[in-house]
Image 1 (cartoon, helix red, strand yellow):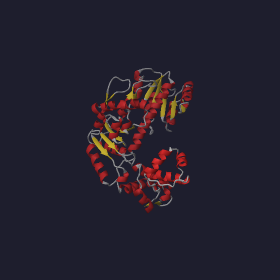
Image 2: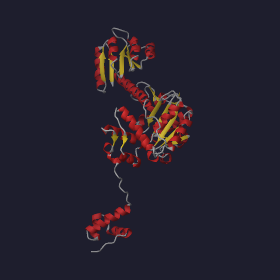
Image 3: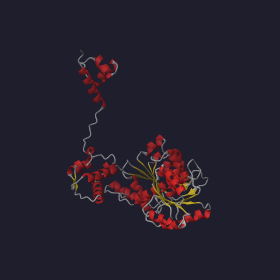
Image 4: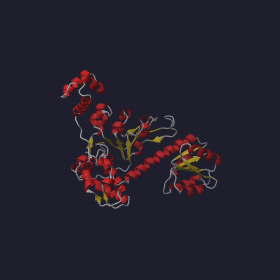
Length: 436
């Protein structure tokens, strides 16, 4: 992250620069306020602002820095160890404050928290602007899913979406959120991507001092989704010890941050998804039965792409138009060979795989028609016939017998089995041989 430090204390600025450089941050130092505003216009991930500057009161700079197009988070550094100053700075738009003398480790943890916050907000803004969050297709199954979305969206009922990887579970979740009219954020949580020991703090937040490194309190993802939708992707990977706490969110609309004895009310819509069979997850003990019954109040099953017939080419044409427009290319479509293979390929990665294949094709094609040579070779490979195991075993033993001219002892030794086992196999498989 690129960080701007507006600070007139040269010795302190040097210490911050040296410390943060080891943590992977790029620090630019400016010693006067007006120069700092000019420098900030270049775009920084975060601004560290000293309030006691030689040319201007740093408090006056906060609104100017906030008005910039990039809206950089501002962390105030002040020797004024009093609550009114901190409150005033936060009201003006500062993200956080640190009092002097500054603990450099506290600066690091605060910057890391800013990075997490910015990353989440950027992801939300980016994803909500993407064109792919539409449900493409004319198959009956897609029509049924559209109807289910329209029915459940206005209600706060939990939804469980089931389907293979890449079928569009997140798309359906986002469409439910969009149609619900909820004004809060859509916050997605990949349950398999968050380390188990960090999950509770990420989901529900934590209070300062609740564990080593928790210098400042942090708001959890559930609170970021307040007024909106909380989407749990791969719900079967949610740690078992957290599942009762998620049930509390569903039943009472309450969360409790780590280290906090009080519950916090949140208004969130819960949507969950899985690519596993829910019955298998229950049997394996990966999903609590009470949580499953609550989540599956409204179930939406998305079929794999290979079962959606003409939707394959409808999606292919849609992605082709999207990528040619984005890459400023011209394309008249697909060759007949590509068209045929698209309809017969099983698409194990479903819509996501098709999208990636089309993107590659547009990049590789210099002409106006997407052809075989522009696409991954595995699409055109004829799958090998799956033969019965007995057939393969019979062929292998027969080959060994011929090599050793029917000698059972030598054949058994080469196959590393007892002679008696080999004789039984010959009988079971109906292999005839000439004794030497």
